[in-house]
Image (tube, rainbow, N blue to C red; front, side, top):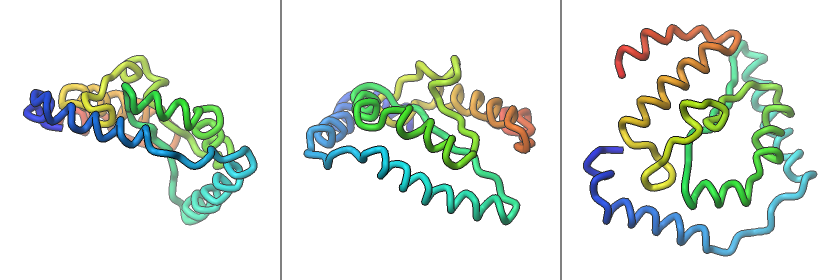
Length: 146
């Protein structure tokens, strides 16, 4: 997201309006627990294939905020989706709300970070990723380019 876009309140307002319009659209009923579990088991099949070939999988939940985040919280409770995803797949995850440096970042148009906050997020993400076993990330290599 460019500084120019963030400074243009009309453009930011337009994108916020798009999100608000989507939030007002009729939605299908939420999945029940059995449907969620079936969906997550399908994802597990895919992650198991990746792991069987020597790959590694880590799920990442990037920041969102404002009305968009409220819509997500209402429709996709973390305990029913994110937490279950990690449980069913046995894969680790990095969620922006679990890090003090990223949990309060504000997305100007609800779904993308401005340039300075993107640097904060990336720094925290690399740090978190490097703490997961098997993810040998040399953070100084990445962080010097920010």
